[in-house]
Image 1 (cartoon, rainbow, N blue to C red):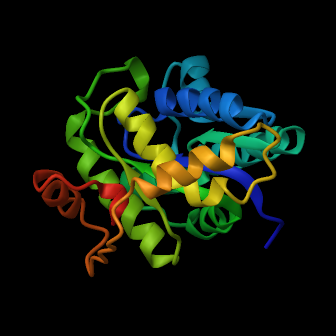
Image 2: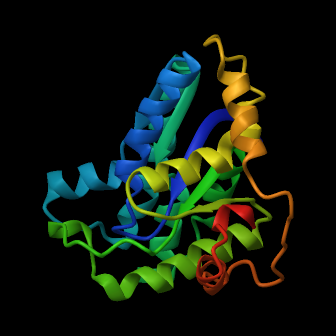
Amino acid sequence: MSDRLNVIALLGAESTGKTALAQALAERLARDTGLRTAWVPEVLREWCEREGRTPRADEQAAIALAQQRRIEEVAAAHDLVVADTTPLMTAVYSEYLFDDRSLHAMAADFQRRCAATLLTALDLPWVADAHLRDGAQVRAPVDRLVRGLLLAQGLSWSVVHGAGEARLEHALDALSPWLRTLPAPRAGLFTRLQQREAAQPAWQWVCEDCDDPQCEHALRATGHKASDV
């Protein structure tokens, strides 16, 4: 496996706020850490806008590889990168749309190189987007496949939920332990992260069925956060 990257990978079904979160997260981290921070857009979106359609089965591998290479290129020139999806999402859609699991290994290998993985919850309303989205009915099965692949590959992740600023804050909560390990030049970051972590619940709860989003629903109903799991 290649060297680990200071990459925060955002995964999630369509219309779950990945792009907005990626941009907001990169902006906040650049401000708070003083590190050279960038976000990497989704290659698939650019491809669909250029071609005016969604890709065929035989075009999936090239898109996944292009996403990986773009992240690697940006990571080489920055201290910290937020990726608006990784090859893992291409692998999941290849499985969902074409029953093709051939990209699983490549996608999982790259995901292991990422420093952190955030999964966006299905708590935002679905919004149509030209050629890019298949419909609200696709989100739940895609979410299950993402969780299943992460679980099968032994990859850890944190779920983020909430709208707007709340979603950003949940993402920062999940990232705080890792962010503390970075050599951030901005004064006061360590103190802010300590304060953020101190505000989190001391208890830990492990779900034996942690690929089930219903667990998050139950937590929210009782006033807890998915990032506490």
